[in-house]
Amino acid sequence: MATSDIPQTIDELRSTLAGRIGLSPDEVAEDSSLFELGFDSVTAFALIGSWRRAGLSCPTQEFVDAPTLGDWWRLIQRAA
Image (cartoon, rainbow, N blue to C red):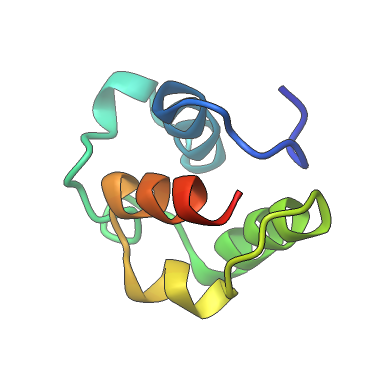
């Protein structure tokens, strides 16, 4: 999956996010705060921006306000 591709499964999303913060996918639980795991705002904005360019119709701020893997997956499902 290319970085700009919108994840199609929660496992794709987990792998993408884990790769961005240098963790293995099994270290990213559905209810873990991505920002507490080491995800930073610059990385988040870049990744979300690439998804928006690929067609995701969800404001970036909604991702920042919902900081867990599960939250992000629900936003992607709703907006894709």
